[in-house]
Length: 342
Image (cartoon, rainbow, N blue to C red; front, side, top):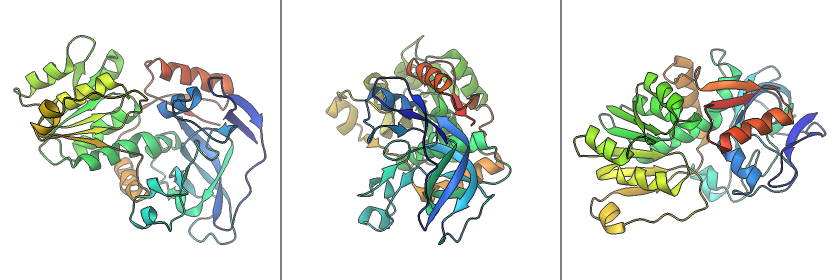
């Protein structure tokens, strides 16, 4: 089969012909119908988040059709539409047994530590598949598996409650989902912070108040809009120390800032004025949980989460097209989410 793979760090991805994956007793083989291109893949390509072993087929946002099943698979059959939870875990360790499988002692993320979805086929354990309703197109389902799921988990970590205010820093694929999910959680006001006018315009159509950080200090703008109070929750999805600090400083008393964006740079905090004094919380959010995905899929099926405008472009399974999409992500271009359609 054809697969687009990271062969060497800081080099373009390459198309390779590799064997179709073999199946274990509890595995399924999925014909990939859509694979999202995530900003994390940019980090993998440049080595900010190391990938091993190399070469590796990237791609952790995957939806498709079951092609074949292992002899002990009971819940799925060929022809089923599925989207894939990207953490392949043991299911038995302490973290798996307590519902925190992203910390599984032997866990492997597809497209990071085991081959992912930038390919014609992918094999995963049966338990990693979430059945996909007919109402959800494959290209939208792929983005559910990371962009939407990661935002959903971050909002759950924030303990966001009905009537609160939320600021979303970054209006890419994660941010567009976060805006809608914050509304679904009952947020009274949602602020969308970015420097890209096209993305801010789309955020506004989704019900957010746009804050253009290229034109003014977003912290001051948010405080002015909230009567000096600040927001109850901020979600940082960009991965820059600057925006992390802005997200923290935009909080009101007893606010919660959840950091999702990946950075390899240190973050400086005024612990007295920004944490202790206002009793604010700075929370890390890592990946998402399998148990969160059925509700997320149902949100999408019912139209509570609308991804029709989030997928802004599709590209074929070709190395040049995928590398160009990664280049645009690296430079914070206009595209919200690009999805590979093999």
